[in-house]
Image 1 (cartoon, rainbow, N blue to C red):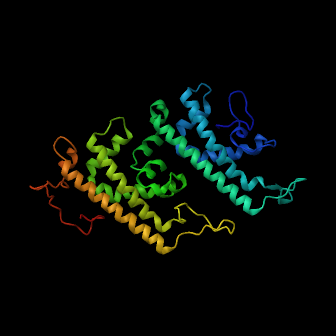
Image 2: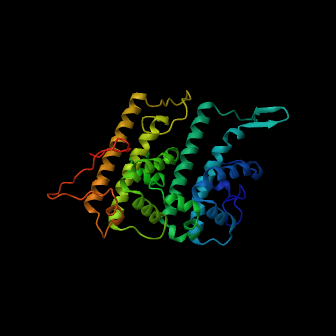
Image 3: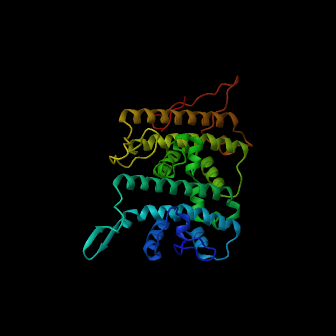
Length: 332
């Protein structure tokens, strides 16, 4: 595990060092299962088993690896605290489950529990997203990460992080929780809407470049940018019917009666969905126009040699292919 004690031992910062406001003794045996659970639930899926094993098992980490470990421990500490919250305010024994009643203290009121839980979740998500963004910027210093299955899967996705989703759709606000809830729909949007526009050959080639060491050309970078803009809006429109969102597009799990966070009305959600779908269709049309205008035998050749290519007509006008009702897109 990234933490081995609640107290700092040698150069290894303990769990208490990463949690502000902790003044009492924290026994490691109390916190250890919550640390393990938080790593399994939040950390390992984000960075992959290979990189996790390196950071957790090696005592000879280089400066870059130590910096990443520190950033990940910031997130892990608060995910641990979040997972531990319900159990730490109760005592379980042969007599059943009861609430703590320590002399000169009082039980945590509901409003404080709600506010504390939300605060812990917000910090954990922000710190993990910041750590992953830093890892992305310094990926060349982490060969274990670049050679892992997790890296290959993540990098081959057009929208591979909350930060990237926010770049093309700012309302996501780098929310990792919101990104994870939509990620499978981003992948679905790739298959349903973008692959038919690019063609299988170009689509697969671009995905291979994203996951590999070969750099895309300038034209391919433009194609990827347009494709990502379409994917993020298509994916969001597909997921919206199943999201419980409030007015600033944060996920709302429940109306707790303490902080009055009401989900958006069905009418407002439908409007947001329609706007996102229209934006996705607009970007898909721009992508198709860019491909037809710029593909040639020397650049974007896989598209140029495919049946999807439509040569620009004299005078700069593009002859549009006939729309097929079986296609999941409409050519403007």
